[in-house]
Image (cartoon, rainbow, N blue to C red; front, top):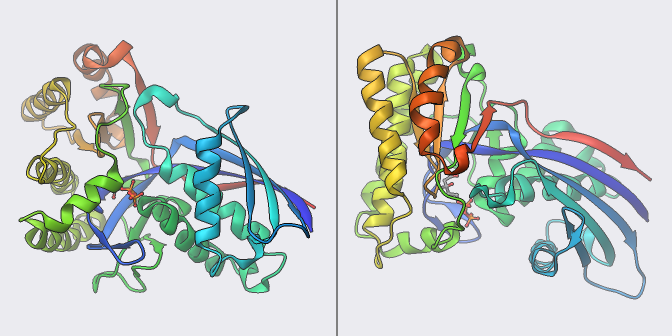
Length: 348
Ligand code: DP6
């Protein structure tokens, strides 16, 4: 069996953060995210069955250049999920992948990269498992595989918003895979997420190491409860369009995430001085104007600026004159809530 499949898959921004895991990559608390649009990975997998190999063999090219380290990681991932994607065994793969955002922008590519990879694996699987021809089953399965590659990647396979992790407040929610979340006021589907690049340097502590430090963080239990409580409140804001409350929760979550890093053992800090300068300016601007311009942070120093499309012209001059000067080389990635992954082609 041979063929070539290509998927484009976006990154996502968690509003309620996944931070802490157990077992086979299962989350300690439910999380919810915006699926992004501009920040995405494009991954093409050329596959062929080889009678002389029993596992899966990967040759990986990133931006047209062979990358052994990425190839080894993907090969390990595919072999680790052989119980769930047995059709990948005995296959040789040539993978070509690229990201829409600059490699040195400090944006994590695991969510877009591993979701794109998981979607390619499921497309290949459609040729041996007919259940994968059902759209919902396909996406849940791709989300499960993506989760096993990187937890946050599980949420990237759905349009607009996704929930990952069991919660009594969202029907059909699961620790195994994310699900699409659509019970939202339409204004949230217009949200912008301008990513203000504060530093290009690779972060000193990876997310995976950060999750592990939650295991003996003295605040761990109260944190997991806090995330559950905030999710419940956030779901109400999403449904009734309460932008101020939504933004308050988003900011509190971002700051809690970084506070957890600061009180890990060993402690560490991923925010930079410019991250704080930007945060203070956003808060002062909001106080002065009353406009719903809020921020979030991932596990890094970059600031995600969140606002609905209807205020874009009002906030633009402030962003340009007051915030962009704090960015490294004035770099901003103008992103927004997006429609999820796209199958580019599948030839066989
Ligand atoms: C802060 O999904 O990158 O972005 O599962 O170890 O690959 P692994 O970690 P990862 O962690 C993401 C953490 C976060 C919050 C979030 O996206 O929910």
